[in-house]
Image 1 (cartoon, rainbow, N blue to C red):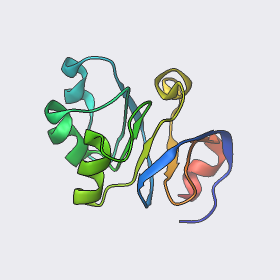
Image 2: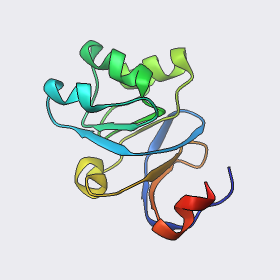
Image 3: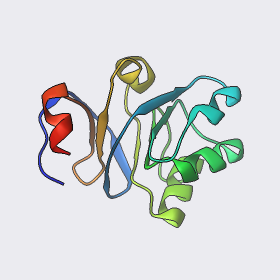
Length: 120
């Protein structure tokens, strides 16, 4: 994956390394989980067992809370899914983004510039 142009970068804490690009889907309630399609980026305050089917469909997971032993972190390591934790206000900041890059290797999530989308 080349280095695409980004608008805003938000730091987080890596739970599992990797990179993914996709449509951000903000989860406010469990009823929102069906909105996560294959390749989307799941964004939520935290995760629990009810999130697992959507987490499998997602190409990456971003949470606002969590630590090394949180559900999202343990699940991500077991499933080798790029995941960032402790991204402040991720739901608010990424809600209106068209496409985001999760770079868990460098511990940030970023909105992508529209001009670089066709290059991906």
